[in-house]
Length: 284
Figure 1 (cartoon, rainbow, N blue to C red):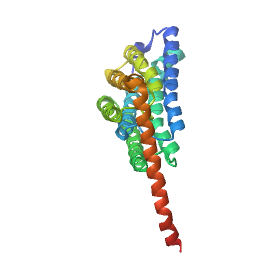
Figure 2: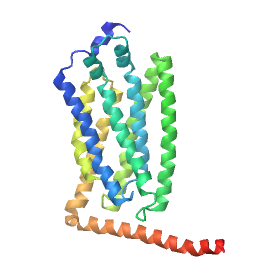
Figure 3: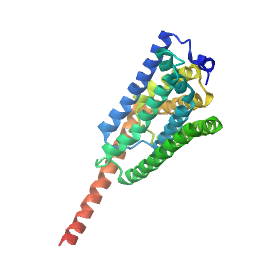
Figure 4: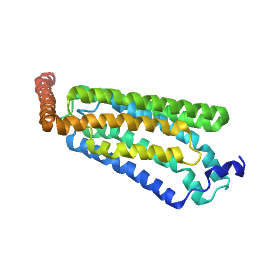
């Protein structure tokens, strides 16, 4: 690759670079309310299992895409065609998407870690989430293999794999909000789903999409999924705010949430008490 081809990554201002770094930090901050809500409630009630599955898989597809797409920028850095600043700036999209992808998958990880032994967690739901965890792990392994194959063969192979992952990310990003919107509409309350997270992410999604779109060497497959995510998350946020604060002044949402948790606790307690005599008989 010639230095002339690497010139596409030059010319970005320091102010723009600092702004992009701030956006990356904002991505991390936006997920903190969701992590805190999972920790405080120790329950996945309100979170769609399919949303966790599709959200994690979508993030892995997007991460695989940007790792492949950014190979040109990394090569320009490697051959010394770019200054340190331009090199870092050319890889900012990789840092941004990598951060977002890890933060998104951590929602699933924290649900698995923090709710497993909780009396507030629906055990049948948790067993499905465990299966989701295994599926996402397999997907991560497949993604690593794709990256190695793409970087090894380069050219059309790399481009096709990048486009495939970009398209799959777009598709899953669109689909993943459908089960969550349906779940929230059915429950009539947000449950463990964090309104605070979405209040930060929805407007942030518009800004994030714009930064990816205007980044040096940007490819449409790297930002299109975030554009769809912005539109659909806005729909989900509006639904949650309506149930939590406007419909019957939020009293119905609070009541339904308490009833759901009470039902889960009752089922877990009843199941535990019923299993104790059987355990004692088997020991005797």
